[in-house]
Amino acid sequence: MNQKGLSEKEVLALLKSARQKDTSYEKVLSAMCTRPHPIAMKAHMDFLESNLGDSGLFSGTKELEEKVINIMGGLLGDPDACGYITTGGTESNIQALRTARNLANKKRPNVIVPVSAHFSFDKTADLLGIKIIKAGLDNEFKVDVSAVENLIDDNTIALVGIAGSTEFGQIDPINDLAGLAMSRDVFLHIDAAFGGFIIPFLGKKYDFDFSVRGVTSITADPHKMGMSTIPAGGLLFREEACLFPLEIDTPYLTIRKQHSLAGTRSGGAVAAAYAVMTHLGREGYTRIVDRCMRMTKRLVDGAGEFGVTPLIDPVMNIVALSVPDLDKVRKRLREKGWFTSITRDPKAMRLIIMPHMSEGSIDRFVSDLGECIRE
Ligand code: 0PR
Image: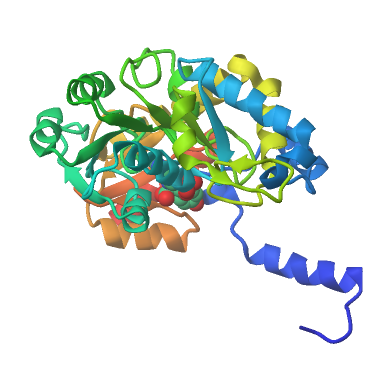
């Protein structure tokens, strides 16, 4: 640490030069985060000192958190759902399976997840001492329910379904998984970290949330398509009893118990989530999702003109494109400033069309993609 403090001007100049090295989102097609809505940024700033880890001191922010959970519950099929705002999808997935593990009380617990599950489940397994068993997918990249059924054994404590898979944006057959979970009396956790703020606004009905009997918990993240600030994930349970196995006594706080994994927690992120959700409402989110889906179609149609097709018709604003010479093409695109990503199996170009894109930038990307393939 420097001995003598720098002036505000000097510090801000240092920050500015660091910030200039960051990528601005214009050419980023690989991220599930985006520029937060302006009202979310404003709300976050107003609550910077609020700490939900000691929520007795911040009862106003705590009320906002309850309202956010209530709004999200309404969006996800159960206005009476309970839960809390986490640091993101990873914490939500860890905590959901921690509840399942603590409720089941098995010596060698296992959880069956689709192979398309996010790597946060591998972290979860390591942390919780749970074995993660991966079930294969069908030809549309949805989990193969008969494979899941065959993998269930006496030590299985939970099944995981994904509503908006990280690589393909696919939605697993949650109804079938729920039937299986209920018949075997195991927990069913839905990872809708990405899809939670898209699927309800797609204008097509998908059964993926608490409206499906047998779904016990859901991850849905305000800091992805919820347009809110980082860090804000959502963890919702159908039953309040699911929060009890997470509770820890906190005798010297203003609250007696805490069920979050994080101790000190951002009140700013919660205020931001409340602000953007109430400001946009269902209509606002529908407009955002419509726009992303129109841009997704524009990209797919454009790529189709030079023979490049998606592995599946995009369900949401994630496209896996079958591109020849993938590594070379991605490298050339990178030289033109574009950030793209990949799917693992089969290997394809993975593109996420977030709200920070525009029709113009999609057209420029398609034209650069065509050029990079022809080169
Ligand atoms: N579940 C699903 C389905 C996810 O896609 C992700 C993250 C998580 C859980 C974990 O969420 P947190 O990262 O909030 O803990 N999916 C993206 C990924 O890892 C996140 C991401 C965001 C990646 C922005 C890149 C980026 O620039 O690929």
